Length: 505
Image (cartoon, rainbow, N blue to C red; front, side, top):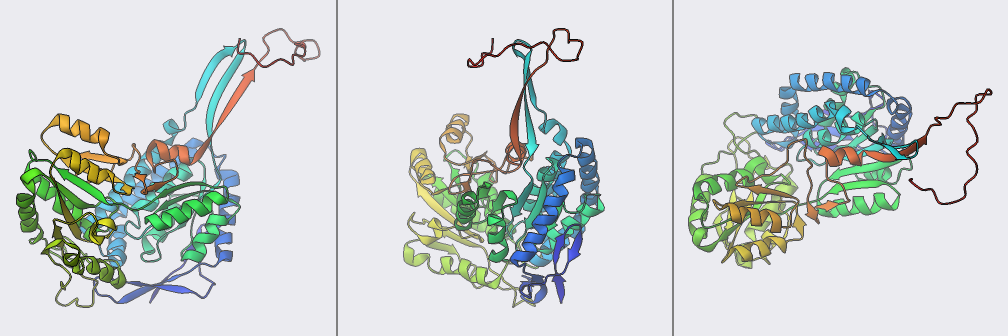
């Protein structure tokens, strides 16, 4: 069986804790890999390597950093297919979806390649007599990323390329469910010339996470995952004096107004709800049908959902793969099985689905629930699977109120032909990312990704301008240079003592 170890100080390091986790192929259910779980001492070794590397990397030139990143971008591009295969083997998503994940991660590497413009400071001259003020940004030191299973390559690439471009060194703790892509990313970074210790990977469970959160040499923590864990990360790391951006869960809504193109809305709902088996924090998991659109919209969604081909991720004919683990599959199925008793109408029930020849895989079919009450578990909880809830609203106002009552505020979308209604929606809806006739409004790399309410803990969104600001801290420098002739001794004439409050005049 393959074993995934750690990557510390520029090389693979075998785990010494004696603890391992099991990684399965979601399509077959068979254990294919074991992953070493780091002890607190192994975490300390990774942080120590990062701290030592910061002494030189943090003061290296922007030209030197970007040269490495350009080479890294070329290597990632050349290894797209390999990375996608690793993702499919351990996560289960179809190969085309895995390729898309790598491509979105590459967007942030490309942003990091242009860090020279992102780190430009500000200068004000003559703010007072012969006084200039400059604002600059400097790296933090050792920073940490804790990333989820659903995007084992993309989310790490949302973090460490910008962090190291800003001059920080990085310790990554990827999900123990699919660790191989993260380690491969680190290997390719070393091949691109990233110095030893700048990027480290420690695998493991809560032991590793909690040590990173409390470690005195860690300056900042980035996290993407569920809301309960995001809250724990934020609370714990903040209590230890660290800067934190912790992105939590979601219940993303799509509001469909009566004037919408229902075919386009149905296509979007199926694509956004069931892509990657619903294991996306930006998946549409709730459609709010306004007015009399509900029945026709549900019929069109059902028609499309029934045609989706489910199978192994390495089969080019598959459009949707299995769920990550058997336990997660069973949990997702429980929401569908309990929906009718809580007042929902079960239009499609995918809980009995299996794939011939792969009966032990973590399979579940597409499920569609209509007329879901707001109090039903299937609506209140983040299911993180291929289950789409449809709710009904009599008016636009009722629909927006329903969305805004959700404790999550990650993303939302409106489908309409009315520009005025769309403009009103984007201003009134309480979510961090909004789509207008776009079901998954994930921003491009040079804008920032992040939600509101229980979808984000901390002040900064991830990547884009917010990412650069998160991985740096500001410094303001005020200077005065004498213009009078210097004395024969080389000293400037004494300007005299003034105990008054400094004046900018």
